[in-house]
Length: 383
Image (cartoon, rainbow, N blue to C red; front, side, top):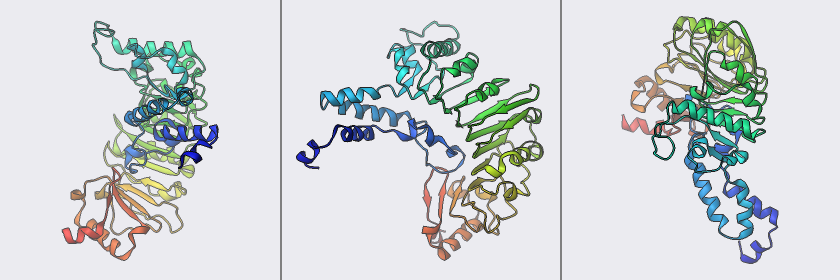
């Protein structure tokens, strides 16, 4: 761009250029968390969700641009403190008024023994969590849309009223719910995404949980009794990761936890991840009938019945040992193996090599859980 052309740009255009230069969509845009199941093998589309480095790099860019001229400095100062680590306020590195500008805050407890602030403080995690809650209560009507690090210490301190001061909250990260904390989350009308998710430990009486806006949910059941105590209302849910641990037996998971949830929300799901870390569960016989609109899936075990010809599923994330060489996937465009290349069975490698020879690689892709693309046509010569 010539000097003459650049000097004729309007103020609005220059402001647009500056905003673009410091834009951090993966880290600061709550919409980008929708359907993000990266941790569950759906590639690396959202690799920067928890990477604070991308934000601090954007901050360095903002400060460099602010040195160009006074008007740029004044405009870019409006975007300071988009992300606030509450530990920085605790350590007096920034003023607590910084939270008034924050789109995203991190309230996670930390370990520190600095002489200036933390040394000798008993129960530091609890004290810090109370400190965070008090600032939220004092500030009120905060613009925060993403709450990060809502750990066990925070959950012991925060109550439902605290979330009323976060009227724009859409995303809660690193959440573990204990006892009756899940109803607390259901009182946030704007909440759309639990990411990476929710582990629910609950042995209280039947509870009707209404999440009108929730789009993405990770649900880890700790017992069949716990699962039975939750009566979900999830009209907007589109992306579900579901699994189990604790006292749940693999044979109970499908009948007592997975099937009831799929009967409730399966027809509206666009992506489904079934976690089998608790042991190999029984496959769902009518998986495609229960989930007729699913486009991305990890079945968590071997699939015995292929999707019908008109089913929209196009992305399969799976451990290579569960991948059936005899199964037809009529509309499959993407395979994600959650196993290193050297662990893939020989018969699967042979089949993928044949696929690469008979189909153009531009019509389908093969990758690992980190988003690295594989070319099976090269495996033939390396075997």
